[in-house]
Image 1 (cartoon, rainbow, N blue to C red):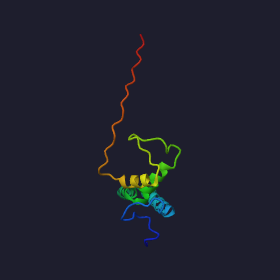
Image 2: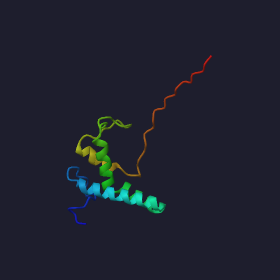
Image 3: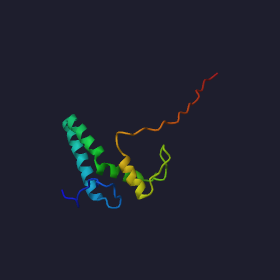
Length: 118
């Protein structure tokens, strides 16, 4: 695989407009097909390792951000109140998708009063 056809992350950061979308899609589809095949064969160790590859791959992260930012609810802010509208925001979102350092925001708890018939 050479540098021009690779869907790997560049060493200096993410170029949102320079991403090879067809190559990234091809890599993600191939990994997903391998996960399905390993699941059907009952090779659960292989399934776990392929899932790890998919969730940590640059292609998987870029396509996840692209999918979230191009759907009908793209203007709805998340729990943190942020929306990713510019290419720089999307690139930063790709870089922030990592396992370590993620701190989920607490959810708002709403108590629903019980109805007790009298």
